[in-house]
Amino acid sequence: MSGEPAPSRRLLALVAAAALAFGACGSSGTAARTASAGGSPGPGSGSGSTPAAVSPGAQGAVPAPAAAASGGAPAAPPTGATGTSSPSSTAAPMVPLAVVTGFANYRVDAVTPASLATRAAAGTLLVPCGAEASLAALFAQARGSGTTAGQAPEASARGTSAPAPSAGAAASAPPGPPGGVAAPAPSATPTCVPADTIPGLLHASSTGLALLPPGLVTPAVRVVPVGSADLFGETPARAAPYPLAIPVPAGWPASWTTYDPANVRVILTTGVNCPDRGVSYQTNVLGRGWDWLLQAGTARYTGRHWDPAFGWWVVDAVRTGHAGAVWALIRNADIAVSDFECSMTRQFTQHDSGTVFSIDPKVAPLMARAGFDVATIAADHNTNPGLGAVVETVDLFRANGIHPVGGGATLAQALQPAVLDVGGIRFGFVGFDAIGGSAAATADSPGVAPLTTANARTAIAAARREGAQVVVALPQWSSVEYRAAFTGFQRSLITELEAAGADAIVGADFHWAGAISITPGGRAGYRFVSASQGNFWFGQDWSRQTQEGVMTMLTFVGTRLTQVRLIPTVVLDDAQPNLTDPATDGQFVLRQVLSVSRLLNP
Image 1: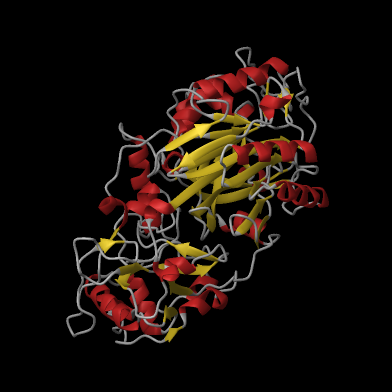
Image 2: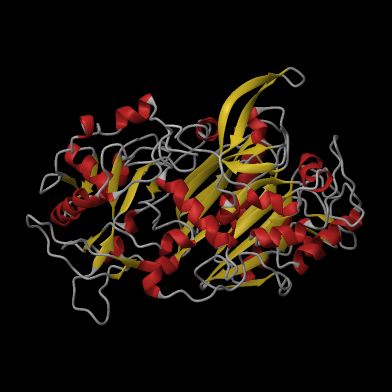
């Protein structure tokens, strides 16, 4: 054996999700979607197709804690995770407790009940008042069947193995048992704090952990999965049995305790997709095939070197397995969105260099297989192959079940929104180009939708007319590329788009992962803005900043934005994005984003 530590639990969950993605039946999501974007886009295989029904028990059953051997709260039978008892049962209603930490803390990305029991015993876990006795029983049970010395009770998310803790992480975590001796059992009554004060105790950079009723979770904190289960994660994670459920404490209002996994919806967005140059070189010229992109898994860094031609540091990395993990993230989202910056055409040409692009039409069915539902084509390279290529791209996406926005045969078509229904909640998407590199669509000419006040109002109003309860704007707006912070130009566009009615804004084209902003207000409760997510299916292997990127996961409970999560990636072979461990290799890009971000206080 190599002596490397065991793979992280969160990574193993991703591997399981990858297996689901490779399965022959079904597609992602717990709820059926219908869409309107000038009619049905056609028979696609993306994540927007209607999945087979999943039983409520499989989706949201939350086991009750068993009674502790030495006393404590009595056991209760499992119930649905809704804060109410099953119609056929007189047992006490149950509530799942979310594990939360500071928004910017990615050092710990998965926990177990046993690791939480250890933290509670050490006094490093915030516990909500009213839950003490039930948690004492649950933790006693966890200590009886939990991890032993030598196993990592808390793990980072997506590395090849659980890394050795950094100095900061080690300082924030309770000490492990020395020499294999069992840690002390938790006290019967952990110290508590009022539940509604917990978010205020976890500032953005906090490394502490707390337990929180689901109704008090907001984007100000980050929910940490418990093993493979995640109350606010993608479909498989929401369906996994959740081990942290207790009888609803007396005095807790229903607004704190109500939780229904069917009311949770996840939107996943990716960075720049322009699969020419290095990407098409790998897939077409070298003959790896387009499905090779879907085999992306995990990677770890082995070093870095200086690129004298461009004057930047470049990371060296190797794949570490788990093929299909990236594909699983896309497929398992309720809605997956692509920033597609270059047009497909049957007259495409492989480009080895330069900034003129054209894309193989095989990419459209590839994206459908990947699970993409929406693609914005409002970008500065989409008329590189000519105006007709914009129309080809729209037609190819629609024929493969993907909803294009931001471009079309006319300005009216380019401003047409995509509106998708996910379990009764309608999400609208609109795309705009603020760069000007592509020809603008007109009343009788193809092109992209320019970002103007009039166009923003027209497109967002159209989405509202089609019933969109949440509208996401997708602008390409990099007046200055290769930076992380918002520019004054972008700040003015944020004001313009929000005034037009956008609830969230996911920007693009810095080729770096850039700043985010989360502020209270709007129809979704919180307004989210992302400057850029960096590169995805696009290669710029001359700097670490252009190699690395993030995928962004937005979780809504009903129409309310509840969680924002960043998933770090690195592009290998100038083509294929792979997951990096957010606790180690992914820290560089996460710090790059968070250091210039505007994060709300709880």
